[in-house]
Amino acid sequence: MKVLVAYTTAYGATRGVAERIAQRLTEAGHEADLCDLAGPVDPSAHAAVVLGSSVHNGQWLAPAARFADLHRAHLAGKPAWLFSVQTVGTTSAMISARLARWVRPKIREPKVAATLRATANVREYRAFAGAIEPEQWPGIVGRVVFRLAGGRYGDHRDWADIDAFAARIIRNIDGL
Image (cartoon, rainbow, N blue to C red):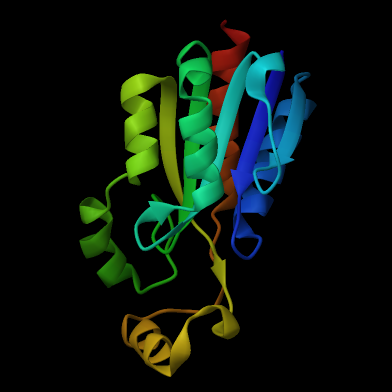
């Protein structure tokens, strides 16, 4: 099956997640087209779509929102999986574990993902923690707040959770 794995990223962590999902799809015998939404992407030749974005201020980045708006009707007819890369993921976080346990239940799907879930054939949405370096956090005040929240710089992506998400996609596609 031909699957579009489309993403937008701010600093590269989301690209890494998308690459891993595309790799797992390919290893399972599917044709995975990995596409950065910074350029035009046409999903019409694909039987399924995996769509992901970095999250800033609780929302997906503009290229993912534009793609979803432009292709909403097309996505309604295909199975789709959505993912976000943000500060607190389902199984890992860039902040202290104690604060993450408090924050995690309050995190909502970004508006674009929630709208797609309501209008498209979305099979699953998953949130992953990303990676961050000091120069990516805005200003000295932001860095202080990040550190006070128990923030740790580095790569916080849970590759086992990402692989499990990809495996669920593969099982679902194989069942189509």
